[in-house]
Length: 255
Ligand SMILES: NC(=O)c1ccc[n+]([C@@H]2O[C@H](COP(=O)([O-])OP(=O)(O)OC[C@H]3O[C@@H](n4cnc5c(N)ncnc54)[C@H](O)[C@@H]3O)[C@@H](O)[C@H]2O)c1
Ligand SMILES: [Zn+2]
Image (cartoon, rainbow, N blue to C red):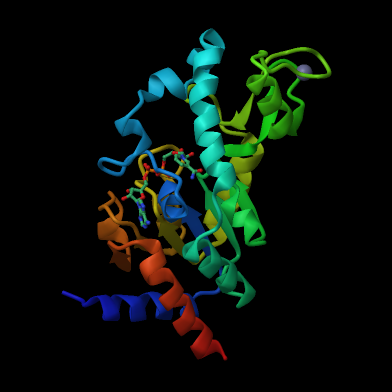
């Protein structure tokens, strides 16, 4: 059994040896910023609400008012949140030339707030709204103002119903995002998985996809995942407790 120190050392060595590194981040990346994830015991969002009721496109259309109330609460938490030590460590890794880009399931925009580049938001972004009729995209603020006034959020061009520009259950992912993600997965030689249960499509398959193209995978996640046995190194700790230390070792060795 490797000790934590040995695992941290191994993680850093993998980063130093690799040339095309991609990070795959899930909701666990942002829990240390105060945004609950979906599946952590007790605190996960799905502990308190039914996903079918609140995050499916069908229920959004049929019960817009009730859904928006829940989304507004989550939205407020997201807008107040700041990047944490983990987001900052990834930004630093990119500055060191050791992170090509990020595939994220998160809709909170926190990676962007650290000025990290080349981010694919697989599940969209809570910072925008989208018209369900003409597909025009707007900043989320206009939609929030309408909701706060008790109005149904509507498109200023065509009066269609607006939705947050995130992928709901029952909706397809943007094909452009999927293509970019595929490309990054195919080209990477190390995939760093951070804070994802790897249950939701497409991240459930991306790690195996990376492996089949010859990449290595490394995981930091509190709970176990179905890919743990395939990873070079797995650390079951909080990202903020280990990633900054790993990046520090990388920085020391590079300089
Ligand atoms: N911040 C956000 O934008 C946000 C928040 C909640 C849900 N979502 C959406 O939820 C879906 C759920 O998928 P998911 O796999 O991303 O999340 P998930 O909730 O299914 O899994 C999160 C995983 O992160 C781990 N985790 C939690 N805090 C951690 C920490 N500090 N350090 C390390 N690991 C930690 C948990 O053990 C869990 O396995 C996604 O589709 C995403 O779009 C996004
Ligand atoms: Zn419209």
